[in-house]
Structure formats: structure tokens, C-alpha cells
Length: 259
Image 1 (cartoon, rainbow, N blue to C red):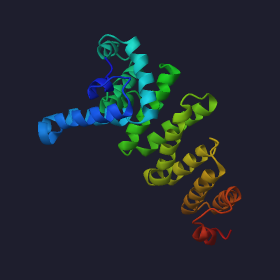
Image 2 (tube, helix red, strand yellow; image 1 turned 90 degrees about the vertical axis):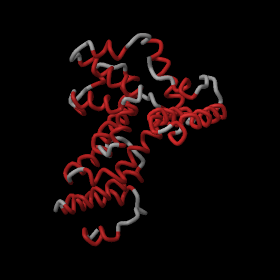
Image 3 (cartoon, rainbow, N blue to C red; image 1 turned 30 degrees about the horizontal axis):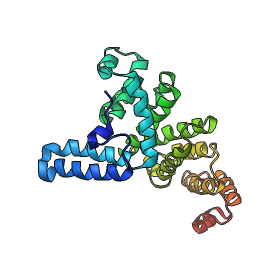
């Protein structure tokens, strides 16, 4: 069965935010490693995860929706059933999602990578909603493990699909913020220059606000300078200034490009 966060906390799906907070404190006192010993560390980790999800209204909404779907579908040992299907790609895709929902992130990532990672087209084998939920959780776990390029690619796929047909809706802000954070702080140092430029070009196709695009284009121009592509850098930088004339941190780049 899918892990029930409410059961972990010892509360009900109808619990208020105050009830959830109170239940977490009571459970934490009982199993905190300082009291129950180091053996309780894993249980404490699961408890914290449950609390983080259920104490956030948006994350709680998404969890309740996913839990409702799975609890209705799978009332038997679903993990064993999927593993018995051998190398069926459909079963492997479902197993990735199942393991993620059960907080078995390392196992889920191992299965995903064994099936090709970014080349594993799970959207062919999962319902659209399941695929989008699964892909976002995968992107989060990859980001935590400093696999920034893979996380970036998955998040871009989700943004593109959400633009085509909304699903996340109010939850989309969290997804976009994670993507922007990876781009702003992590991605450039995680890939080579050519790949970074390609990533920026991909971002510019997604319809973000001009101010965001201008900053990405400034970064793209800086990378093109390092690659020795001065003419391309000048063109990109001029377009960045057109989109945001007040673009900050451009003095040095202006000097290099004489723009």
C-alpha cells in the first residue's frame, strides 16, 4: 500500500493545520533519535517528510490527489506485482512512480537510470497526471543530488507540457521557482559552455516574462564571450537590453562587447 502520511502523524485526512502540527510534535518527541536512539533516524526522516508535505496547503493538495488515485487502484502488493513483470517498460515506469511515492527515492532513481534516464519516455506508459507528478518529484530528487542538468531538462518538459494543457495550475509557481533557482545558481557550473547556451535557448522558447529572459540572455552572452563567439554574444546582449533596459550587472559585459 502507498505510504499514508496521515497515519505516520497519527491524525486523519480531515485534520486542521493546527492538528497536524500538534500531531507532528507528539510523534517527534516519541521517536526523536535523542530519545529513541539512532535506530529511529529513518522513522524520523519519514515523519519530517510527512509533516513538510501536509503542513503546506499546496503540497498537501497534490499529495491527497495522488494518494486518492493510488489507494483506489492498488490494494495489494503492487511493488511485487510490478517487479514480476520483468523488463516491461510500462511496469518500470509505474514502479519508478510507486517507489517515489513510498519515499524510496534511491530505488526509483536507480530504476529510472537503468531504463535510460532522460531517454526513458515515461509519458508513454503513465497517465498524463501521473507522469507529470512523477516527473516533478524526480526533478526535485535529482536537484537534491546535484544532478542539475537532468533536473533542468525534466522541469523544462513539465513547463512546456503545462503551457500546452494546464494541470499543476496554482502549483506551477513552485515548479517554475525550482527551475529558475537551478538556472540562476547551479546550471552554468554543472555543464559545458555549449550545453549551457543550448539550455538558455530552450528557456527562451517557454514564454517567461521579458525580465527573466533578459537575465538569461545576459548569462548566455557571458558564456558566448568565453566561447569566443563575440558576434553572437553581441546580438544576444543587445536583445537582452531591449527586453529589459534596466538590466543590472552589465557594465563589464558592455566593455567587452562594446555595446
